[in-house]
Image 1 (cartoon, one colour):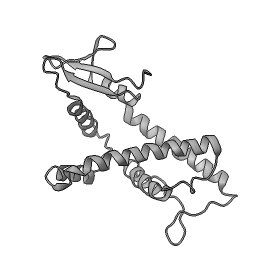
Image 2: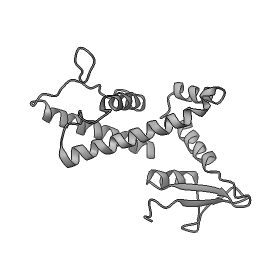
Image 3: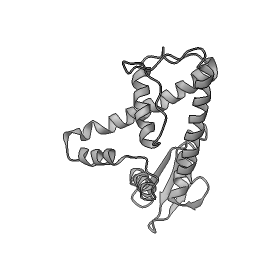
Length: 188
């Protein structure tokens, strides 16, 4: 099993200190966030009871980032999450969120594959328009001022002209650089 695929076991002692069983040292919440950003799966268990505390600590990491002004979740989303705990939607929300993030990851992966491997237009990819709308909404929320793509009169994405291909590539590079800069700020 590859290192990035193997789940990292963190044990919480009675003193609430977190112990990395892989490196035999104590870690902080920020260290755990760094492991996750690097692509590691993390499991946090209580040493004495064996209870899985992963969800509790991941929520604590998110809360700390949000409280420092590193807001990723819009207020409306947080409100809807709280509301979902008291409604019938509680059973649907986890699957919806998981599917949305999976779709985002898959879409980003396919987009990079298309740009890097083939350079072919992505318009032919099934579900591209729906994915594009979701990603645009997500990016607008994460990065105010994110450029809006050109559209035709009916609101559908405009076909790029052959002359605009180079401009589009430069615009994508600029957007990618802006996104990388924003992500770098979030990881500090």
